Image (cartoon, rainbow, N blue to C red; front, side, top):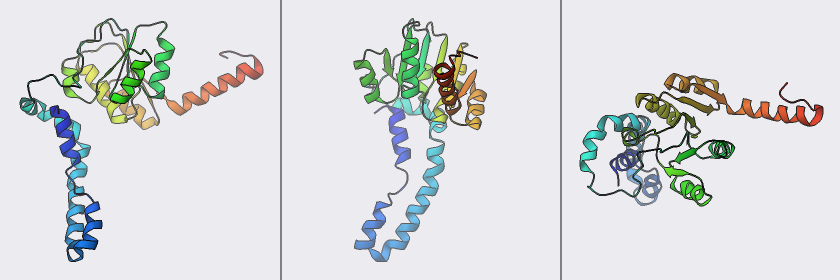
Length: 222
């Protein structure tokens, strides 16, 4: 495993499983209360660790990388985006729609942290690679090439904030746009370095209203 994968896995395993209480209630009922307290305390410890997992890894990565084996990892990420003009980060419904809309007019490259989703899009002919926007090593080795704009379409708000911040810290001067579900999330993403954010539900409502105008009144863009 890569150092980052091993670190995040270890953090997620910090707390004891509540399944142990079910077993204890049958096998060791006299130990149920001490075990319940132990499980509760382990959750108190693991909750902040999981919340701060990515910043913690950023601080420790240079030390942890020394323990990686000197081999090519199966999920090792590319370092150059080539001649692509637009980078789409996250290929869910929003990212896929943006990709399909732009692919005939611009050179597009996409990335996603879900290997299964990457393979599915590759089978469809999409120019996509596996990468995790929250991975410090990915940003250290990334060459933006000709990329002029980045679309942040990941589901996780924190991932979008990290990506926007890492893009700016890596020296990217181009346009960064993101979608979000709530106003406070949009403000946080802007503060992290994005140029614009679009509220997904609001934009969907505008799009529906535009279809109504065109269909019922023959009015376009007014």
